[in-house]
Length: 208
Image 1 (tube, helix red, strand yellow):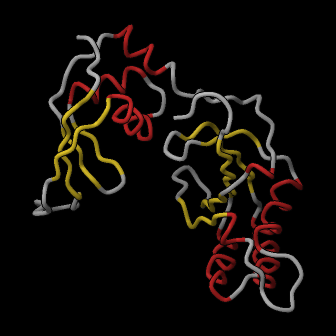
Image 2 (cartoon, rainbow, N blue to C red):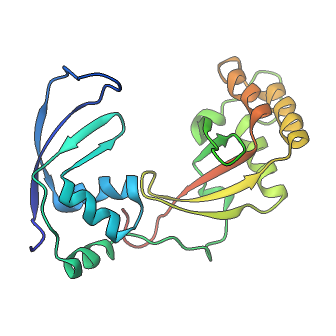
């Protein structure tokens, strides 16, 4: 079927492990708005997006969304997806475009430990030179980060800088020296970090 211009959606806060008694909210989404949310979960995978549109449900940011499922016309769905950005490994890392640093653990099942926005990380501790943001970006640039993909959830290109245990320990010590009290917990968390993810919002062309 042709893609709808709008989709009536219901959603409620999701409660894991038991029946939710949260109120259900009804809202009309534009199709692009719904597609934007789905891409944040699936990435640009036409088959997976089509499957979710047919199923009529998705979990996103602690909420469960429902709509009347429908079969999208493949050509129209691919045309709609083409309006969203693609990953671009040729994009060089630019520290000035980075707005968020995410700490991740190592191993196959890497998990997010903490994240720090540029504005928060730029806070200065009294009587010290430099700030936590400058230290993180300097370490990221010491060995060029590699392109890690495009995040539809963050509307940004993501770069990755792996850290050896000794690098993480040294970085945590340096971060602890300059971090104000409110960011000391973040500085300590760096010791357990095995990769930095550097988030750089894409500012040109069509945005997701």
